Image (cartoon, rainbow, N blue to C red; front, side, top):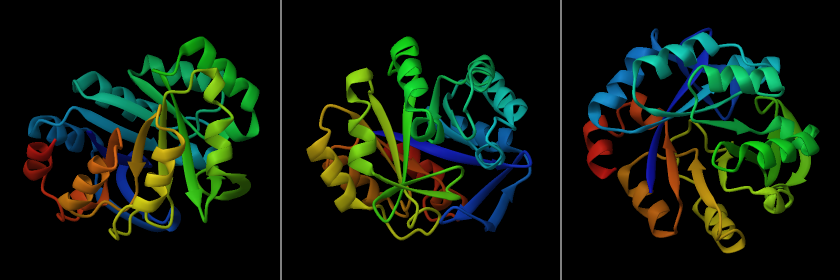
Length: 238
């Protein structure tokens, strides 16, 4: 199972939200590049980079920060937040992203998302499935849909979908443990997919459980910044 530390960006700084609420923001570090280098120096290989300004604005905003991190580390970076147009997609890839996470566009313009999947491939395009009470939320989690998680994922299987990052919004930034039952159900429904868990990881035992149920990756954010999981321990586990 891949261990994927996270950096969330607002105004170019490293922050975390609680349950996706922009009014419940904690700013951790001034320079995200320093954080990314610490991840790399610890021996971690991956990075989940979220442009929260972009998610709210509906377009990629912090692309210069993304470019700095991709240019100055060897981390395998996946980028999400506000990628809704061909220009946004091009900018993210030119900035050095190895993969892009798409959520809102897949809900509002599913045919365009299908086209990207078919043209760019499932290795490049990740479906970002952010869930509140079993239903997909979009636009930086500010907009609730009536689309179920299973319906959302299943609709793109014929188009070459390979990787899905699923965040339980109620757990994100809360250090209350991941939504294991939800992920187990996903594994039973979509065993052929590379499923990545996001939200709630607070201790190394959480990672053990996620690996045991067959998740392909786990994103770790606030637990690192709050010191609940140390980078050396996380790297040793990885």
